[in-house]
Length: 384
Image 1 (cartoon, one colour):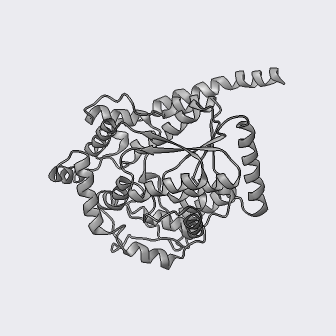
Image 2 (cartoon, one colour):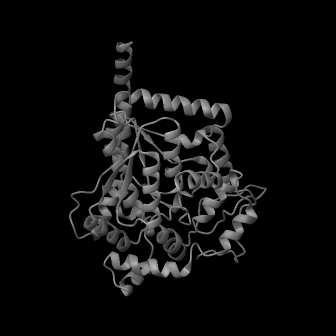
Image 3 (cartoon, rainbow, N blue to C red):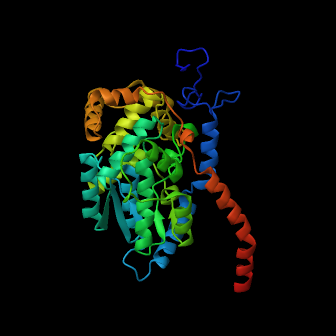
């Protein structure tokens, strides 16, 4: 049974717009406050640094990056999508005197506004841009497989390859630091059941092996063992945005004035595919409205009021005419007829776990880590 706001069992958080629709993990205390509020506050206390402390941490991270990149053309790498977070991160890197190599992952779904935002940022800041162009025939085949599998997280292929391309490029140029746009203030809140592990290459391969039609020869891979290799190479991710006062509206204004940035609508709408996936497929097929999590996060960080969030939730995720245009465009680009695409969207939902996961790999990996600890400690003692 699909719960709705009209049901007697329906409950919404007293503080935010999180509710128990399509979220089996939500819980409420005696005040009606949901668990996500307390989880956010814990993360904010542990990971967000403001004022002088934030400034000192930011300077220390910047100094570490500069030291590691001394004598090199680039001292860090930054994935640029044309969105708010990555664009502001590029501006912040410029202000800190860093030398980032900007990397853009082109997998065929960029909106025109996103492309323009990238060009303006690159031209204004004067950084080098490396564009990783995905083999479209392979990527198309993977996406077709995911639709046929009828699993929830259709963004896994793109996200997996984006991170893999970043690590691969960092390794190629001997770069030790990756600047991450992740931050607690605007995007910490998200139910676990609303997405899937982006790095599970076993699950990705199994879905493609079952439903795909082509061999994958060129797609960048990550997964558990690849991640371990890159970490062993000393490549690490740093989150600068947790060290600044990160207010979404103020940041939008700043990058608009300084970089000519243009707003493309909702969160992650710089990608036509992600716009349709989050704004149409998730609500209609899985009854998930990700705006609830995004807006609730802004409520928790004091950037939005609950009445303001509720007003936004009352409207469709994005223009309904554009939704239909996106639907037709995406179906055609993926090689599905209109009827085929509709039938795929009506398939019974299946979990990612039905296709196998990397859980066995993880068990082996952590056993090896446990066995290696005594040797690692001995090596450290010898060095001392």
